[in-house]
Length: 355
Image 1 (cartoon, rainbow, N blue to C red):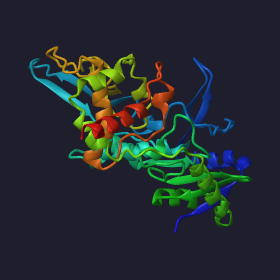
Image 2: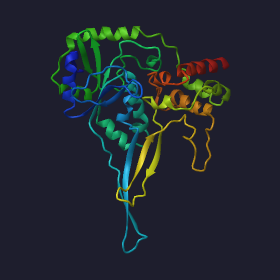
Image 3: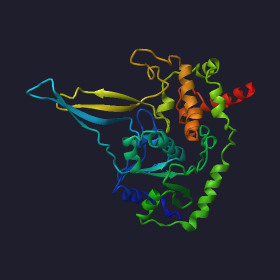
Image 4: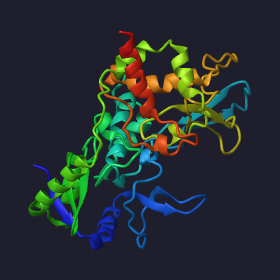
């Protein structure tokens, strides 16, 4: 049976302080530069508690924007300089972390990332170490917005997928419900009061959130229909004509995981060398350029085809669900207002009309 606890709005700072005794707590923080935004940062006492939807998802907690996969040093044998010894440290470092007040679409992003990094042929040890030391406290949404479409892709404003604790606002505070064993242990370790009596209000609030949504179109055919359009260049050119290939859609996405690998240093100086993994994006013209100089995706239409096909066709064929969580950040942050929903719906309609 899940643990259900209650905390008043005034009690949230005390709750966060309790969590921060044993873990790094990442919470939404308002940033004014270069433009107003909400970012996840380590919480400190006296920081205001912000419950707005973050501009950038907390994906960095498990897949940092840039990380060292390993560091290495080289040393020469004094008697035989051609004999070089390599000393390598590939320890996967992870800090116990609690993400506080992300949204269900953000939490679902972690569930999407888990498949390729944990369930494939090879397990990524760096991702695994951070994921195993992560707890996710998600605040359910009170209503949808004009760019959200979580309910199109299998999620929703109160979806528990990827969350350890679901937090719902009611009139006099917040009710926290454990979803996983991790969430159960987290709540059991607090001194929050029992919230079972308030749960009917939670159910009412969650029902109201769902009723606020515009009905979702049926996109169940998206995987096969998008695959059927894979070689129809005119379709992708139409939708990519205004794209700037800036990559904002991928960098703001909770579930994109393209990365680049680079080496720094030669290993002989005092600081040694290191291998870095950094976020990259499939919309970049350089992303698929090979060492030979050949680039199989020079056209932005082909790069967009790759991005849409992966999220709505290839990934669901491999793992059973869309790799898009419907957060809408790619829509809200696109400088030319491209809407991924229009592309998917058009693909479903065009492919159906060809049958």
